[in-house]
Length: 128
Figure 1 (tube, one colour):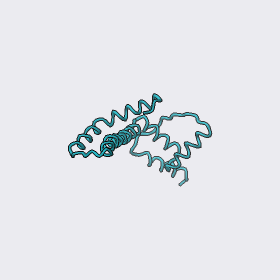
Figure 2 (figure 1 turned 30 degrees about the vertical axis):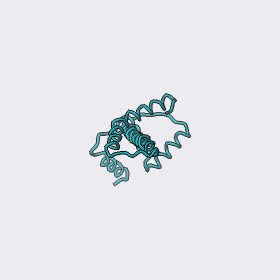
Figure 3 (figure 1 turned 90 degrees about the vertical axis):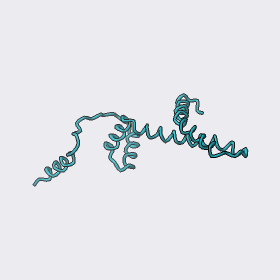
Figure 4 (figure 1 turned 45 degrees about the vertical axis):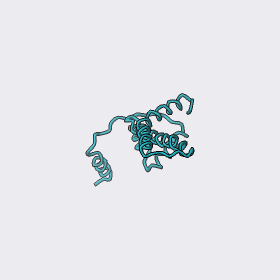
């Protein structure tokens, strides 16, 4: 059996179970950009085509942005807890369990808005 047919058979076997990919998108990069892209793909154990396809689809679906937004909101939640808890504690004030729970409710309901406002200010170049 010729070796060519083995390659075709294994590729056909690999494609079973998913829709055929027949569309392509091309773009051009500088040599430095290509090296950077190849390095990132290699670091992830992928070839450039696999990695770029994954990144493009992830961006189109918004999944990475959603994940990053969620993480940023949680960081802002922690920041709000520190801001709202440390100052009174440093002044020697005692908190009741209900005061602490109220502060946590405030953080839970406001962390996304605070994160969105902060990102907007960064985009506008005004920082905090």
